[in-house]
Figure: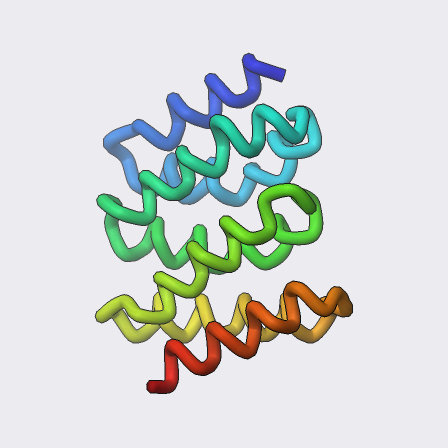
Length: 128
């Protein structure tokens, strides 16, 4: 549903970071209204852009929401792992901790060998 994505985009562009944070907590609802193509082509890039140039409180909220989103978007799981991996390297401790917590909650439920390989690569990259 294009309207839901447009509304989310407008809220995420707000000057008020509380509006942004509230919209992040509604991302799951928007995902349920969108097709896989809309999620991959519009929503994932939108989230990725926010992670690059937003306030720490907003980034923390995204780090928290990426774990539940992971299981709703099977075709975008690699991108979510990549985003969380990059958040694990951020300077702000609370963001790093939340990204690690989100990854742990994802990895505790993942059974696919491909994703397990990704986990090993991620742990190796972050620790060395």
